Image (cartoon, rainbow, N blue to C red):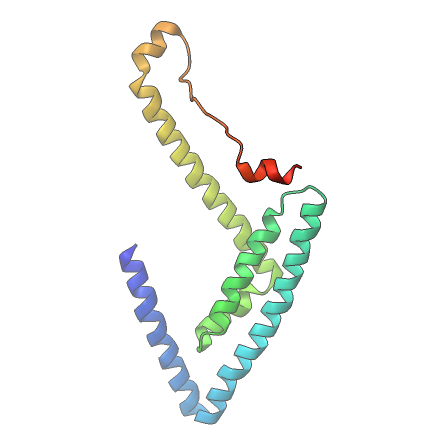
Amino acid sequence: MFLRLLLLFTVVPLVELWLLFAISSRTSPLFTIGLVVATGFLGAALARRQGWQAWLRIQQQLAQGQPPTNALVDGVLIILAAAVLITPGVLTDLVGFALLVPSIRATLRSRLASWLKTRATARFHTSFHATTQGNSAENSETGKHPVIDTEFTRHPADDESSD
């Protein structure tokens, strides 16, 4: 993980700097600065508009009693797009504008969901397996499955809001 972050924070800025110098040498420094400023403003405006739409979808789905999972993931991806769009650079702007395209966001959302499902399932099975291994002699004698004991308590703030 450390190596990935090191590469992210060193290689990406170097590539961005090289791209900005290449654009500047083929056009002019003023054009390059204008390009960076224009993409920043355009990206911020688009991200704000799409973020507001995602917020309205979240509110609508909550009002209907539905979990707003897709709208929440869209909101996170739009925030990520806004963050990379305000970062000066051509490569980050391309990534940011790509994240603002709904079909690309939908593809990323489904891939992210399957990745999280795989990770969560793998971790659940690993911890469940470890639990059953520790109680295997006890379970084989009684024929029972391992018991997970839970306890639920009310938060005092919940009692006050129901009055």
